[in-house]
Amino acid sequence: MARVVVGLSGGVDSSVAAYLLKEQGHDVIGLFMRNWNDASPTLEDECPWIDDSRDAMMVAEQLGIPFQILDLSADYKTRIVDYMFAEYAAGRTPNPDVLCNREIKFDLFLQNALKLGADFVATGHYVRKDSKIIDGKEYFRLLQGKDPNKDQSYFLCQLNQEQLSRALFPIGHLQKSEVREIAVNAGLHVHSKKDSQGLCFIGKVSLPEFLQQQLKTKEGDVVLIDREAPSVLDHIRRMEEATGPEIWAEKPCFTRKEGKVIGKHKGAHFYTIGQRRGLHIGGTGLPIFVLQTDVKENIIYVGLGEDHPALLSKALQADDNGIHWVNPMAKTLLSSGKKMKARIRYRQALFDCELNMTENRQFCIFHTAQRSVTPGQFLAVYCEEELICSATIK
Image (tube, rainbow, N blue to C red; front, top):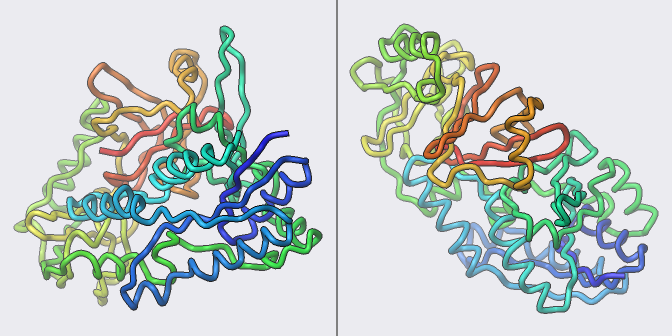
């Protein structure tokens, strides 16, 4: 049996993961990650890490396994929080959860686990993995979790083969209801604990509120763009007439002169494409959605209705880092004729797509136009149950 270090978060999922591994006879160690260390009153009072660490320690005691707290807050601030602020300030929308898995849980946490003599690290993610031997080499596949409502493969879309080779996902084959039932039967005190929402370092504080504590507010105009505006009509025409992804991936170019000011905002960097809440502007009939942000001029361009044509795109381009292959052997699928599906945000229904790759640029073409393609977010591409590759959206 193997030595496995489990990332005990204090929740039911990681607790059941540790329980199942212990039942299988593995040498299990519980390790709690402290990712945030900020003594500012608002965040320190709201951040639940102390309660979570106490719950994790109690679970370890119940299971009779060693337990430690690992402080990764300095690295988390550098690798995740500072990066997140820089991206928002540049008008992009990062996904800290994806980055946390790539940079913290399956990098720094894994390194510390290996120092403890671990063969594997395990988490409570609702994902699965398997492997295939090709030309004498083992390749690992990242598979969707069996519970379609809890599948978290999207959050692991930036993992590589080395990270997957060391990872175990003990609950990926289970439904959430089954996990809670196991926790009840095992007598784990966290069996009815609510799932955590959002990032652990934010706690109960909303993301906009958190950002406003870190980034300066700067009042600017909210400009309403009509569906008949010249830039919108030009965007529609180009989407219809274009035959290649270069045009399909382009965003419409708005100007202040073609719209009308309908309100004020506190800083363009606090908003993201497709956002509906937080504008606090009424009397428009249809709901308002953010179409585009201009952080240089500090303008937010908005439109009425979720079907505003400026929200729709037929393709996206990967950023300069290009396509990240979770499974490098999956590249052969590009010419195999197998159908690919993708999503551009967590919990989004998968949609049909195809990859268009040249030496310098990589595109994902949508069979059906998609809403709110947002720079800085992640594209995740699947073939059947396997998440084969991902990219940061340009």
